[in-house]
Image (cartoon, rainbow, N blue to C red; front, top):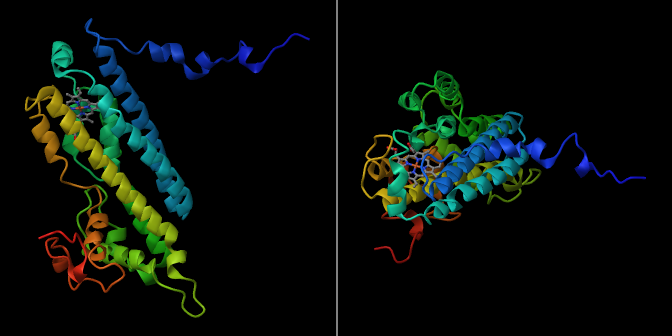
Length: 316
Ligand code: HEM
């Protein structure tokens, strides 16, 4: 009998399933410069990973809504691996010398990373709710409409907070206003939610009480989600930072092709995390491992004098 393995089937092949011909036809350098292909492929690969990241973030929220934190955690691990790739890809573009980039940069104008619809969708979804960004995508009305749907969506942090309240609001005491917040707005610092997060983190070190399950075990999955959210926020900021340094390396202090002040504008985006409460709860935890809660949020927020003798022993 003639061999007819599946990979010889003329119905479907690697190339037809993955649309390789179409994919390889999508790189159209506008100049004859050798490095332009690297520039195009790098951006296209980023866009593919942005697509996958959004796919995973939406699924994470679905799992949190269905109170399946461990499933959400698994997908967060995948998301962090994607973020790692996004960060690690930057040095690839940095193998291009700034003088080489200058030779084809004019052919990009006025296109810019500013106009990445998927990047904005991720930002909107996570809480950078800035409608002004819609104007940057130019004439593409369809893209604008799609982006706009992410402006009022609840963020992954909103989904987490609601999950935490359903899990046990007798313990976490999530305020009703936080559960019904205006999701068209960025997350503002909320000390009451920091209280809830502090309870979650401190519960990890509570022992079993008579007849009660160890709270640390009981809420470990929720604590892991809080850590995953923080890690997402941290890795996003690391990408931003690395991108700024690459921009400085390529074009110094010059303006961007999108018309911004370039590295100066990009550096200004570093300061604001998506989910500030997850960062400020550290002020209460870091200074006194396992100790009493800090006296007041304001005192705890003063990093120069950590309460409880914690922090860097060499700090002045
Ligand atoms: C030679 C490499 C690159 C240079 C010189 C560069 C430069 C810039 C500059 C100057 C801006 C500010 C906006 C403007 O006025 O144009 C910007 C924004 C941006 N770039 Fe790049 N970029 C590079 C590579 C990349 C890559 C590989 C990506 C991956 C997708 C990317 C994504 C973005 C995004 C998303 C923004 C908007 C950031 C924000 O508004 O917070 N860039 N880029």
